[in-house]
Image (tube, rainbow, N blue to C red; front, side, top):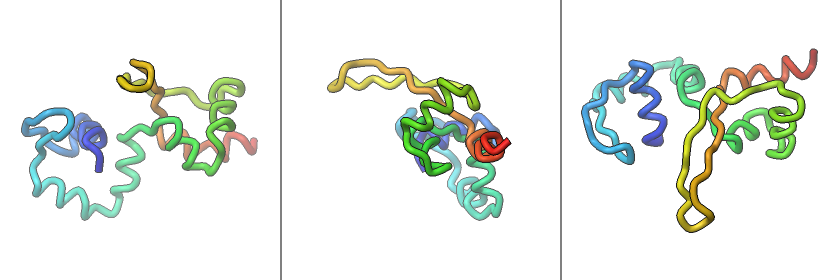
Length: 113
């Protein structure tokens, strides 16, 4: 699980933040163990951890260009937030949209209607 996912689970109240930096947040190991044993963990992650555009395109099995068309041209889905990433070696700061996994899961139903 990525530090970003841990941060989202902390904000959702599923884990308690104990300190540390954003690159390696400290959470209680017993809470992590209990969360890992939950049968609904995939649903919790889908509900609370957003997807980047590449991950969002991968979920329904479409090319990234097709996903971009779904977002920008058709307007079937909108970002739920953004994250700013500093690509120091590749041109600087970029804002990346984030999408709800639940919204992505509904895409086949939306597009078939």
